[in-house]
Image (cartoon, rainbow, N blue to C red; front, side, top):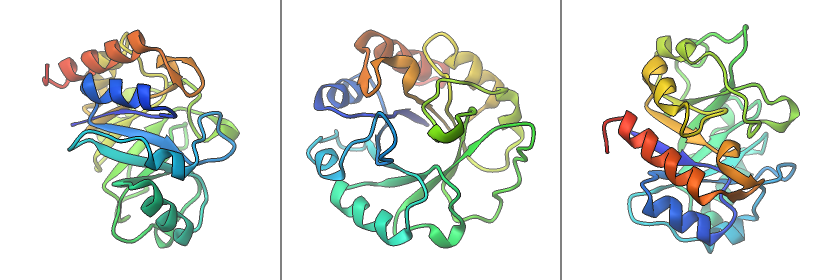
Length: 201
């Protein structure tokens, strides 16, 4: 079970996310994102034991991803661009993001060296963080482990889990007070709702 809080930019939000039951936190290294954080700054934000540190990248070279992952002490890289398997870094778990549209086919990524497929809503040039959801039932037939993203909050995460049966869920913009700053109540409520829906209490 993965319950991820993405777009972490400060220590306060990271500490609260870990304390309230997140199993992964995400740092965004896409410079065009309002949630961008330098990898050196991400490295200064500690996480509790067992909580996975995820770095979000968009169309970076394999060498760049590997270098920044070392700096930020990452466990997972989340690739949100047009990366191919040859672009995947060595020695790190990979979550490949795909935006679900009418053209999406769940078997497209079969055979890719990935731990999971992160399914996101439409985001245009933003590559995620738009707060837009998609038809969650489309994820239920995916033959790979799925992490649901896009428009999730405490009010809909249980329904999303019930419809998609995912490995994990990922929230960002819908639990913020401003881009890169989490609303403590919304984040706590999301984490509790997600864990309850997964049966983790």
